[in-house]
Image 1 (tube, helix red, strand yellow):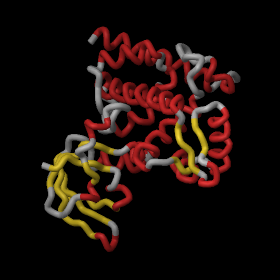
Image 2 (image 1 turned 135 degrees about the vertical axis):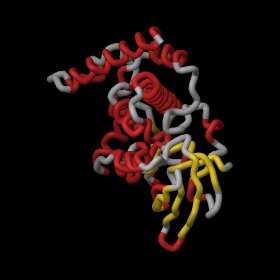
Image 3 (image 1 turned 120 degrees about the horizontal axis):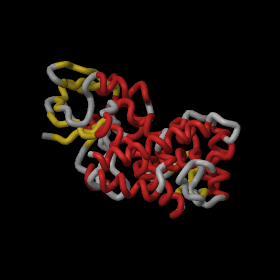
Length: 259
C-alpha cells in the first residue's frame, strides 16, 4: 500500500501542476509544458479525439465526423478543422467523398496509449481513494494527459495488469475479456444476468452515468429483465427488487453476463 500511495502522490502532483498550467497564460503551449509528457505525444485535444475515434472504429467500423461532433459536444466545423490537422499530422487518414476517416497505425497506437492511461487513472481513483464510479471518468480526464510512460508501467504493475476499467470496458488488446457480455437490448423478458459493463459512450454522458449508478445499474449488480416493449422502445429491469425502466437508447450501452 505504501508503494501504491507513492505512485498516487506522484499522479496527483502532475495533475495539480497540469491544472495550474491550464489556468495560466501558458495554456496555449500546455502540450509542451505538462511534466513528464513525451515530446512526440499528441496534444490533449487530439488525445480526446483519438479516444472517441477508437471506440467508434472498434464498434462501428468507421468514424463519421457528424457522429464525432455529437459525441465530443463540439460543432461540425470544429471537428472538420481538427480532423484536418490530425490528417496533416498522420493520426488519421480520410476516405475522400464518403466523409469518414480511419486511424492510422500511429493514430491507433496513440489512442491505445491514452485509453490505457485513462483507465489506469480510473482504477487508481476507485481502488485507492474510493471515488464513486459515477465520478471517476471525468476525474481521470484531468489526469490521463500527465501520466508518463514510466508511471503508466508502474501503475499497470501496481494494479495487477487489469483487463477492464471500473465501468467494465476493455483495455486495448483485452477485448476478448468482454466479448461474451451482451447489451440489455438483446435480452428477453425473464432472462437474468449480472451487469458487467457500461459502455464508453454512456460514460461520456455524465447525466446518464449518474442516473445508472444512482439506481444500482453498475458492474456487479444482479438484474432481471421483466418487460420489453419494442413499440415504445423501452425495457424494464429489476435490481434489488426495484423495477427500473430504460429506453433502448440507454439500455444498448449496458452489458450483462447472462446467468
